[in-house]
Length: 418
Image (cartoon, rainbow, N blue to C red; front, top):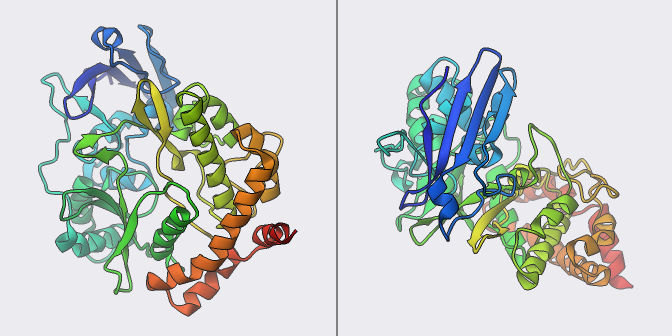
């Protein structure tokens, strides 16, 4: 199957950027992207990702039918749905959607980032007219998500149809939907999963607030329905600002990775050196990245894979790290990171290794050691009060102790005494 070309545009003004062609064969899905000549000639033009440099050449992507997710270039896959959204779309649409079907099924208004996908008349195929869920309807969408996840309760087909308009936009495997507050600001609403044995949503909000307290740039989050047994974490969308859409690319896209291929923070730092501005701006971003490594280790975050780090286009052909997001402390910590520190340090969740690697991120080792000690002290003092303020019981907190009281924290405590 070959489909008509999809016109790729940018932002609210629908600036033409290029054309995407897609073909689905029996054993493979293939796409080709080419920048528009007008975009290449424009003063404001920039590469949509480091792996798609400006130029007249076509960019090819392909994947087997058995594992089709790499059929779209990474920057397009970043604004397509992930596990949860794919399940919702597939159930509502029936059949076996192609990667392009998934991409175009996403609600244009709430799609991640600034990219827009238009048909020949210049219309987004999924310009969904239904309103984005607000607080008054959040309980309904929580019920739809539960029904879809369990196959019980509300008719599952109806749940899929409702969620497709509001909950197929976003990445990740956990149940969620879009949400708009009383000021019209978009959020991600994350629901408690029926499989949760811990208060995951309360802890995610606590972790993001803890990140802010130690000086990490993190997404803003709060709880809705916090007095219920099934609270909802509302995480403010950082790809929207003052009515504008901000262009986004994941760290996976920045590094040109495919499939579930992992990588190293040091490789990401190297890519940032040619994409994150002049020396002062670059140094700020590299130091921020290093602090996030240390923070992930100290709070036993097990979700630091490359799709859970991202970049926002900052203008003048430069990028900056997006706010940190999807930080999930785990009391059954594995002792390993999803993204390795460097090829010499490997994937071990070791603060000592992170400090040793600090010069790779333009951070002096002694400064990194002092910063990590201060971070550990703040985390040790503040994690429990934050969790309690978000409705976690004392028993809940006890169950999370191994995530915050472990050998890496204790090693830094000893370092701080010297």
